[in-house]
Length: 233
Image (cartoon, rainbow, N blue to C red):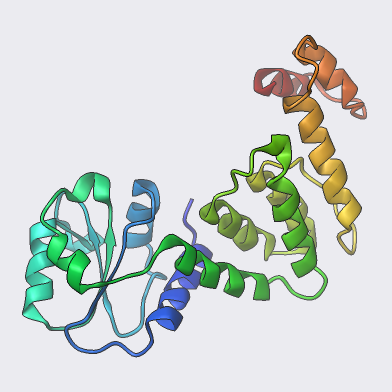
């Protein structure tokens, strides 16, 4: 899930948000899932310049940058090298009130506001607008509006590879994959959303999964494709 690209941009975002660190300061995050926290801790590219990075969970492992809540409190009280703590509230347990009160929390909206800004800059000319439109349209799928900050960030990281890859990356937003040749087009996103709405959010509750797939008018789908769509529908 977490690649070098994810880790590097998140680290860069924290550097930008936190500025020049001062001795004894503590910044912390508690907005990331357990899986993302673990993978970030293990990714060398997650290097926040000038700050020691630790993940606060329920065990210690120096090679993986994992520490317990008690150890995190000790590090804060030592007032030594400035810290960034990735806190997993599910596993860290109690005893972190001192850090919460004295530290600088980087909230989800703040973190991904900066991370997504940096990720868009990697897209190149002609693709930034397409990416914004893809996120906006995805938020309207089935009137759900459930695109998470991480989901958008994950899409932008994947889309940065090329315009062709971006067409497949839209699936991370819940959209139908798009075959892009040359410059991406806004109309392709609308068609992608229409395909998903037909398959998953068809207002006709009486329509069978097979009927919804037939309504997609796919060009000679294979038996494997039909089987996968039937299972998803």
